[in-house]
Length: 75
Image 1 (cartoon, rainbow, N blue to C red):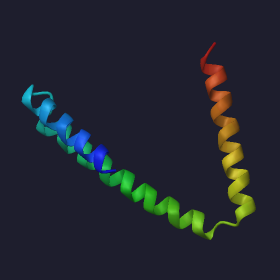
Image 2 (image 1 turned 90 degrees about the vertical axis):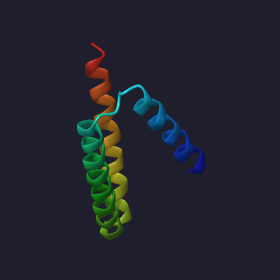
Image 3 (image 1 turned 135 degrees about the vertical axis):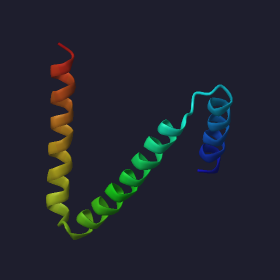
Image 4 (image 1 turned 60 degrees about the vertical axis):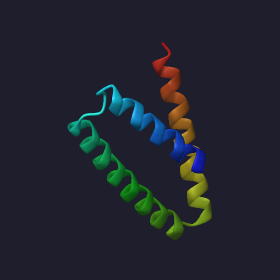
């Protein structure tokens, strides 16, 4: 995790140096970060209340759906 943070800090510095990070882009990134945190928190709460069997079925269904989507997009 420390390495990832260091890498992202370096990237931020480089992107800022070459004017690739603007106010609107940083704002969008901050908003997306908040939404991702809220989604992770909500998902964790839902999973904690879900029976193990239902969770396993949900994961299997999502994997199948994901695989079918990839197969259909390949055509």
